[in-house]
Amino acid sequence: MLKSLRRLSLALLSILTITTYAADWNKQWIRHPYSGNNAQVWFRGSYKAEGPIAEAKISVATSGRYILYVNERIVSRDILLPYNPGHSQQPVVMDFEVQRFMRPDSNVIALWYSPDPESGYTEDRQIAVDFYGEYDDGRRFSYSSDSTWLCKQANGGFSLNGDEIIDARKYLDGWKSPSIRQSDWTKAEVTAAGTKTMTYAAPVHSSWHIDHIYDYVSVDVTDNGITYDFGRNIEGWARLTLRNMSTGDTLDINGFKYVCRGETDEQAFNRFSTIHCGYITIKGPKKFSRKNIMKIEAIDIREYLNKSYLY
Image 1 (cartoon, rainbow, N blue to C red):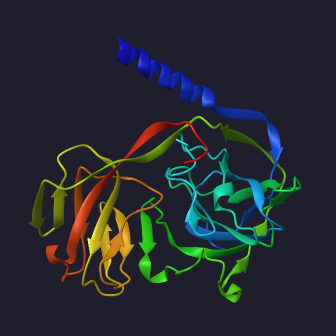
Image 2 (cartoon, rainbow, N blue to C red; image 1 turned 30 degrees about the horizontal axis):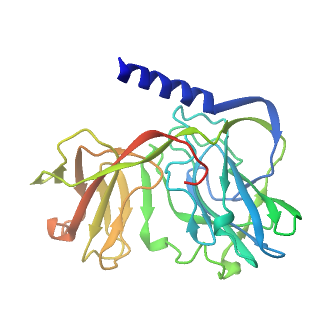
């Protein structure tokens, strides 16, 4: 009885804390001008502070997914943000308190954006970001994402059938750091600002997080690949630590494609999609064997109720 009541209360809280606004909101939307609808994108905006910051918040709207960084530090421990279990193309707005990441001089806001592989690729407005707060002396500040933001196609994306692809060779070290060569980046395109109905995630809201990390219980090597059995039903990420791979070697990990960088002990895992991980089958080039896999883990991702902006 108590368990049933607890489930009911959690369900009611989840419903109450995600609010859909029928009224239209004005947002300054930006996108990569020619990245392609199934590509992941790195975005970054730089802001010069006029003194110590007492309060700072960032609001992000998107119908895709993202990882948010402030001054190279990841803001949220939650994953697959924003929570959008129905994979609706209606944008979700999330607010983050980020004062603890602020510097009194320059500040860099960076997002790793991804389209939602299950909601289609028709949304041309990729993200809208508002950065606002207050200085120690009481002065207010407010900025919106605009053409001063820079963007670059990231090293990930999705195939036409929705499988995530990560090409480690194309990862740009320091892409979210203050010092980058701006000539390698493109100015973000401001799309028709307009208005749009949105869903707002309140401070208490449903979200996704890493619930547990499992080791395998058995392994089987066949002509079809190397299969690891984790002995349970898991939906989440497969994380492999690889050694002695050559640059350009491509692995298929339950449909997730990973192109190797060729570094010692590189890690392969999907970022913006989930796969079934009860059994993980890896297929690679002819020379690929179990000796190349130093470690394999199944990362179980679960829904939970987040009760704070301070992730």
